[in-house]
Image (tube, rainbow, N blue to C red; front, side, top):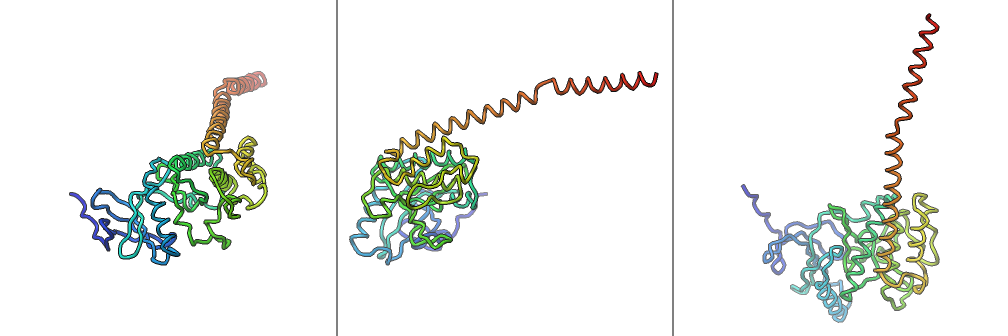
Length: 300
């Protein structure tokens, strides 16, 4: 027997609003049903006060309309954007998962896990640049780790706008030095952002906002030196000293992941070889036989 459809608590355009979700950023967030496409989506209804003026509103709407052209497995899909009764709304895919911040839980991730997620984040950023939708700030609150363990990044970090972390800093301030200083940015700003996320996954702390941060291995001894080098190059204060594109950073991280996998396989093989050696068992058996012989000789 099929389950009855949930009763909508409201509607906007052809989206039946089914459940209000916990607040995360500006406006109201809903799990909704797209009555035309027949799928579950998330609808964010932005407050009228979100836009400073008509120019800002038009720029935002244009950005979100362009975002619909981006299709990448590591980017949150934007399905629709529109306006109703003076309020803008954005419709994007509904994901079963949790923010990366929840997985971090104030402690470093296993190194291989952190590298794997960073590769997916970098590939998502690279995919967004292909469509001209590159971004310059990203936070652990905005990155979603799906139930299958895949990273998904939003093209626009609406979840962090206006939000503060435990230290009172704006979550959206996780950005490159040039962006924070109001200077022009390019793809190298996204290289910095991906490096900053990886740094936090490895150390449970943010890199310093100015200057060169401490080597991750000085905070987490499990981080190998070759990964240190990749992270610090991505976080170079001077954009000219960083990797010059996000795909290049992704390729470097894949190389490190391959090295980590080879090392792990080598350790597993060594442990298996040690466990399968017959000598320890033979020595124990020989010692036992020797003890029995000695006991027999003394008894005789």
